Image (cartoon, rainbow, N blue to C red):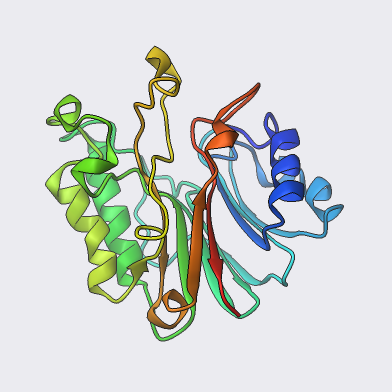
Length: 245
């Protein structure tokens, strides 16, 4: 997202156009009291927000009820003694939804890389697949070589390292299923630099995991590439998954 306040008009337009029931947002980059709650309330959405400053920040918007909001999760590690606002959870129409902004990692071997792996391990340890559960957002991992435009450009880098990919698939080992693959192809992120978007030099790093009973209800998916175009576009685009009732 790269700042909800900067991109509020685009988010509002997206909600009106797409007619989604629940939207998970990452990189809101504002304190909770700075989040534009009223703008979304005017559209019929309730909000759950976690934010602290101009970095990180996540939110869930729901027009199908929003209950039991929870910021963070048990066992979440700190970075430099701070619990960063990288997750928020809420129950929306009986489905437990988590909006996730997984740590970037910076570089293999960097303290932030170890923090990323610890964060993912703690998250996976909290997964309960006995309930309808959806975990979605910016995973900052490309689990397959085809999820980046040229794997040779990423040799030795984060996002494609074996440990990160193992952490990604650990969610599936405990019973979650990534439901967008097989329903839609394409990248979800293009760096602002070096004309990555016009050249379609992108990455698929945004995903949606669902617990078994919920995964069976996934019927369609879309990557809204149009949202990467025009003034004030984020470097990520929406991943939309439709679930049957």
